[in-house]
Length: 362
Image (cartoon, rainbow, N blue to C red; front, top):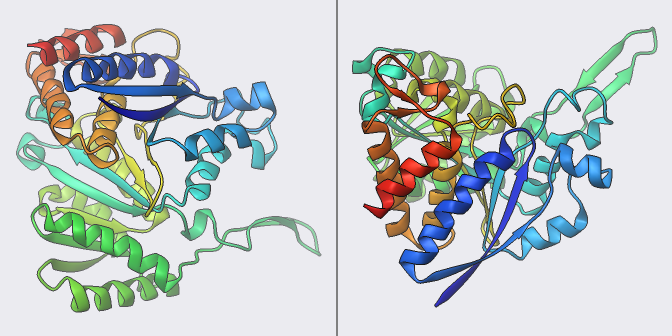
């Protein structure tokens, strides 16, 4: 029997309650696929700060590094906003985890399940059948570039500084991921940047163009300015297959695409490196306004676990089953509050987990 080591980091807000449902799905996979998950659990984000004085401890990082996959909930909340040192805010724990493990490739699928086409903010005909994969560079760019900080100006006042910085090597390795993914899909890549006003964007365009010509001429490549990409996502989103972009623009564009699918609560993500474990987490935040009420949507977290099965654990068939079970539950009309519409059945977090398990077992 195969054993995989899994680290679970529930985090803050609704993280712990949606992770309960992920654990239930993990148990089903163990039972039906002759596999054992050796699970360890740790703290990250605000809860780690409260317990340990830092948002991610060296011990937790070490355990994560030795795992086959890391499944995370979410971090942050108003409890810590502006009330902790900037380098100890909950989000700093997640950023450190990504940076230390060199998780440079963030995969964010935006898929509109047919049962949710009417829940989108756009017309059904614009989103029905939507299947976009965002490939976002995750370890560089403006979130990590130096110099950065807030400084006092000599004549009074202050200035905030962030640096958008990319090397050719960083661009090439993330572009290669996008082209490889496109080869397994519809063979189309849109590379989004701001080459018209940013030198980092110009370098991005030049390096992506060179790699495409040298190794991936079988894939169709189109360059698009990031602001135009945002407009096209709400105008004609089905024109996209794979969208390649940097850290900042990828963060913004993939969140905008979330509403095309019906809810931010539907979007999973994977963060991958060349070696070591992948990090899998829902795109949504910690939702502190509903935390502890048992009404959060667990689907994005469950689909994130399915991505872990596919990309880190070589269990694609189990991932297919989970994704099919989610589609079945939605087709039967089960909806958490974020997805609720007239004629559907309102369910809580545990009931949605029950429905997905029932679909898997049947």
